[in-house]
Image 1 (cartoon, rainbow, N blue to C red):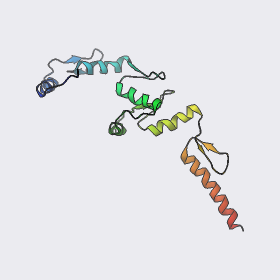
Image 2 (image 1 turned 90 degrees about the vertical axis):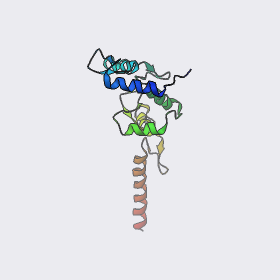
Image 3 (image 1 turned 30 degrees about the horizontal axis):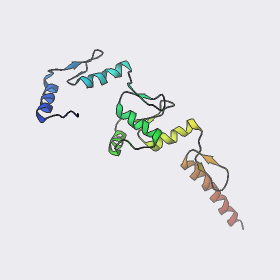
Length: 157
C-alpha cells in the first residue's frame, strides 16, 4: 500500500527542518537532516556506495532515477518525464552515463553520439562516395566538398 502524507505530517516534518528536532547527523561531516533516507543517500557520497545496478551492463548508481534513465539507453524506452531530463540540463547533475567510461550528459543524442566512439559505428554515409562518419555535422561538411567540386566543374565549362 502506498504511503500517504497528510498535511499535518508534512507540516510536522517541515518544522523539524527548522528546530533540528528528530534530526539525523552524518557520521562523516556536519550534514544534518530530518529524513533517515536523505541521510543514507548523503552518506553514500562519502562511502561510494551505489546500490542500484543495471541488469544489462556494469553501470551502478546512487539514485534509482538515474538507473531508470540509464536502462532506457539499452531498451530505447523513454522512462523519464522529459521535463525532469530538461531540468537536469540546468544543473550540474548529469543523468545519463556512458557504460564504457566516465562520460556523463543530460542529452540522449549526445550519449548515443559519444558511444559511437566506443563501438566504432559510423551510421552517417555519403551518397556520393564511400565516406562514413559517426557525426552528422561531419557528413554535412564532407558533402559540401562534393557540391563545391561540381560547381567548379560547371564553371570551368
